[in-house]
Image (cartoon, rainbow, N blue to C red):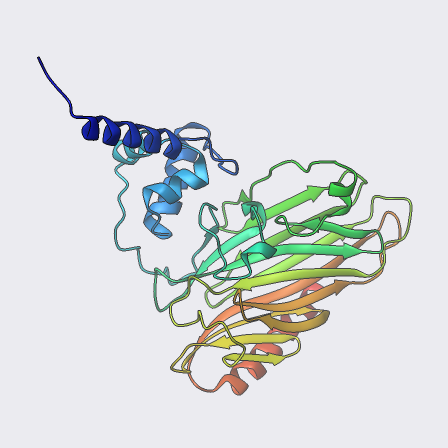
Length: 323
């Protein structure tokens, strides 16, 4: 007859409880639908973002056993990420399951992934910045949209929930999103990868019966996952409206963002993150307003000349878009 000591029984019971706890449902998990989506998201998380199984579970809500079986089925393993393509910066929808901030986490509870894009650095395929486009939109109606939980939006106050969305992945490699709010306001974002920068476009259409004013937008570039850029201070930040930039510890690599028309250029050390926050012009009922943004990496020490070059090139791009 097999006998088990009281200590062994206690250990087995604790292990069983821990196992059950580890497999509890994940509140913010998004399970991929079908084999194609499963393969895409697992490659996104494991191959490119370097996720461990527990992070995949947080992002998908799948059990450990399901994840391990799917990884084996599709032949996906955590390995050295592929090098950057030469034709365009690598960008992917941010998969969630790993908080994109280092600090001020109480200011971003349950971050939603449908506004977030990972952009991988040309010098290190494992390092990436996370762009939140938009993180928030304010108007004369109040806080009209927020991509996480922090302070109540006008929809929280009305006890109305917004549906979960995902980026539309287009054949040209760009990412597109559009959301219509319960009161008829619609807004969208288009992110287009180029060889040395991202073209960013955001628009808002007023489907209400009143004019929208004070249309401030908060767009965030989070630096947690970029090696050498996680300093939680503004000592390595440059604020030159509309440009906001961060440098690495050696001072020879930079991350640059800008939006026009820029309302406020700033950086938040605890996160750490960059903000070139734009503002839509006032928007009467039935009309649409548009914003344009820039994001790029730079390797070198001539940041002043690089910003001057970007300003010239970007101005030419914006002129071409107006014709």
